[in-house]
Image (cartoon, rainbow, N blue to C red; front, side, top):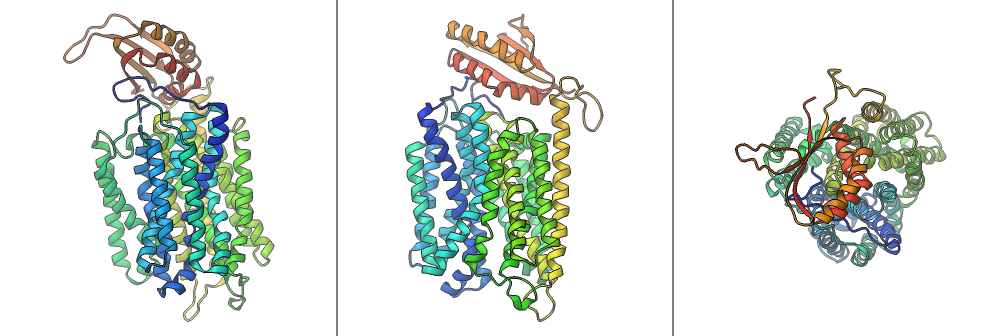
Length: 586
């Protein structure tokens, strides 16, 4: 990932006016909420779809699976498009696709058209990362962090908002009426985006890696198919294992394509950064646990009393169990930006994972009363809200502004796969706990699944604590940075700037006046500035500046600081330079 555009020309940011900020923030939040809620509409309507269209429950399940699949595939593609100059057009076109898909779900068409409409609705899931990119580009730095955290939270709690509303409409007016809700809100989101979305900053360029997108789509199709088809694992284990191997091979091929490509769909080298890799690992395992508990509680609430447990709730009433999840998730999301001033993001991830683990423990120990299910769901929502709000801060701390959408898109792909596996693991455990001739699993199967979830959240906590330890060693000026494996010094970071032409010396002077203090504040040390240059081979003897930082992460963070971004605005098009941030060997 690089914060410099093609050609070395500084990116000119366009912050919006204060009055526009007041409109932009609710617009970004509303769009993220809508696409999450609409994608989740398939969950409460599966039984109604099976009845209305005379298809099996397994076929009806695809109204949810196909939305998750199309969202997982579209997310990295939209993230790359959103990093380019046509971000506004990408957002509007994507919402238009979602509106068209919503119309297909409402019209009296065969089941295949419903699936097509749900796939189009799922594409909207890729907009969440783009909303974060808009916030980071066009809001003041101190405001953008809080807004990005809020966007991340509403993308989670959207399911809790859409579930009970869709269930109520399905009971009152049928499945078409429930999907009609999706058409109304997506049309409103499109109008909101058309009125409020600003253009991307100048100087951006983005190309979509078509080959990488196709291979990734095939791999994700297999992963999500295997996660959703539990009968395949129980009845045809060899076939399922073979498909799993093919999925792994495709993911390896995709990684090779991305490493060799000049314009990768996802910068795999950047994903290997310890902070990003650790955050994605925490998101993957944590996503499995979070969605597992969500699935367990909603299924338990709807189990009839005849099974010896459960509450036999209708789809709508069971949806009301999600209200504590949404409310406390939103509360945690609003509190997290304030807490971040005192506690590092990785520690917040760890603490939130512990809270989710507490939700599992509560569900495992006490679920004989409906109030206890509400309590467990509230604890889950608070933990998920805090986790979701803290996650962007971990990744974006080492990500240039221009790559915000792409970096967060990959994280959301990881989250989608984790959620799908969480649902599948819950189904497999409950299926294993269902005796011959029984429709419902034994109550003890839920306890077993809860214990598995506690294990998943323990792994998530440890991964987050490892991130916190690394962050502490990199940012504490009184502690020498050491490599986590060898104990040696951390790799330093360098700014290398080669000035090819200087067209406006006054702009360069204004830049130097602002850049000097910004570099010093970021921990940079100037090693060379306009010194003598001897060029060999294809080199050019041009004015070169070399600045050293204690770590590569510190070098990236200094470039993304508000002070240095102000210097870049002053520089504008006054020079043409080759700017790059380089990681040292030691």
